[in-house]
Amino acid sequence: MAGKRKEEQVRLNVKAAYLGSKIVEATYVSKAYGDLVLLDQFYYNMARYEKVGIVGRNGTGKSTFLRMLMGEEQPDSGRFDIGETVSFAYYSQAGLAFNEQMKVIDVVRDVAEEISLGDGKKLSASQFLQHFLFTPETQHNYVHKLSGGEKRRLYLCTVLMRNPNFLVLDEPTNDLDILTLNILEDYLKHFKGCVLVVSHDRYFMDKIVDHLLVFEGAGKVRDFPGNYTQYRHWRDKQEDDARKQKDATKETRKAKQGIPSIVQPEASPDKPKKLSYKEQRELEALEAAIEALETEKAAIETALSSGTCPGNEIEQHAKRLSVLAVELEEKSDRWLSLQL
Image 1: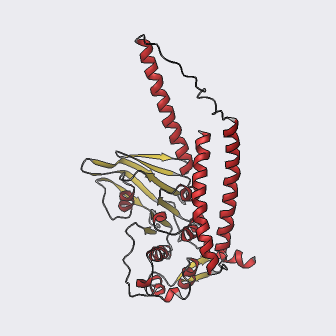
Image 2 (image 1 turned 90 degrees about the vertical axis):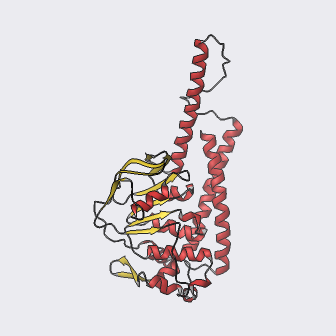
Image 3 (image 1 turned 60 degrees about the vertical axis):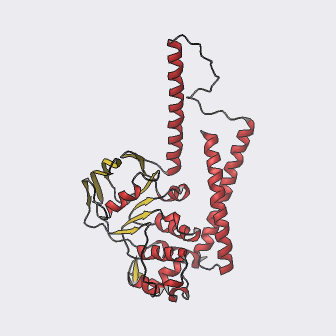
């Protein structure tokens, strides 16, 4: 057990570079491609150690915003003021063009030989790779022998090995396998720096961020103080209220025109939704099931992070985690629909 705790501590307590009080200030940034407006006078001042999620429909400017922040594109107007102590590391959708003839270990050593854990302790490039599931044998494979998923995992290692204090992640859940995502979740939860992440994965976002920038289109960005699930709950309620307001307006117009309206019995909007006996039983069962699934998921993650699982068990755990993620998503969605 002591060995397990030590293993987890080594992986999660990577010491980020010092981060001062001035982080990033986006000052009235605007960006458009012809008639497609992505940002319109956007202002945001990022706080120290803040972990922010970026969500929105495809084509609303999320990735463009990250590229402008990283200096890969220029805004039409406005600017990004970046603090002197900020050290970025950027995981992009484009990825990294590896030298296919290099060995895995040499790719990471080209970034850094070791990474600081604080208190004078260091983690070598090889040890770091092991924590991200590259065995000592695999580390001496040539890059061209890696699968697509392994290359994305190696790319992630090169990003994190830079020892940044500000991580920028563009859709990491699209390319990484479930085991790597669980390791990344642990890393980010204990990361002593800022995080800006674009993702459509609600479960991943709920674990990492508690603040959202919602790209709504036409240059509008909503600053939402909550996680992804809370935002969806709020958005669904706003849409429901808007429908009720529209119906009420129609009824008012009919009344003024002397058209009789058909009154539909409806629960008061000020009162919580009243569930039927069957729905109440379903809600209780869902809550118990979600708790059981989350407990099982946490147990598997703990087993994987111990570093002592045999290869055949790792494969079984990976398959089970994929199933658990789907079941949690489905049951959480149903739970939310009963609550609204």
